[in-house]
Length: 134
Image (cartoon, rainbow, N blue to C red; front, side, top):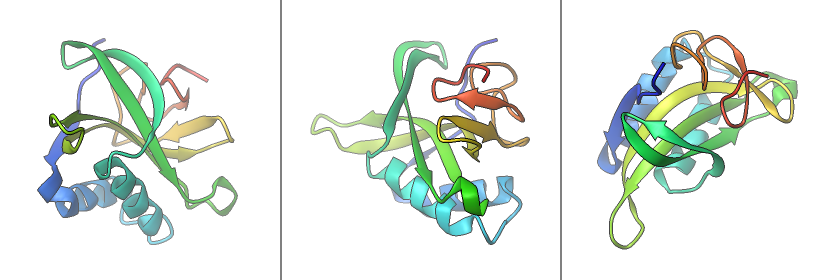
């Protein structure tokens, strides 16, 4: 099953991305600040390496993740994404692949509504940082 971008946003549409993700997590007030912070990191070009894979038919895409919140407080949100950048390395577009939260320090429980149809990053599953089954 090919990995695909669920949705993408140009950098001037971060508020629209927040609305989209908040809808996908059911407007969970406990997780809302974490979702906004994780997206802020994605749109700012921050994030940690997850995997290099083929996404949307493009080989060698560097997928990253950004997390905020605490698994212990059930307010963790993690976004898995990749970006397009301009010649200066500034993010011009953010592509979201999956949303979830920390299950343990090194695994992520992906949301039912926002993930892939199969691994890597299969919706409603627990994955490692590279999207493989945990």
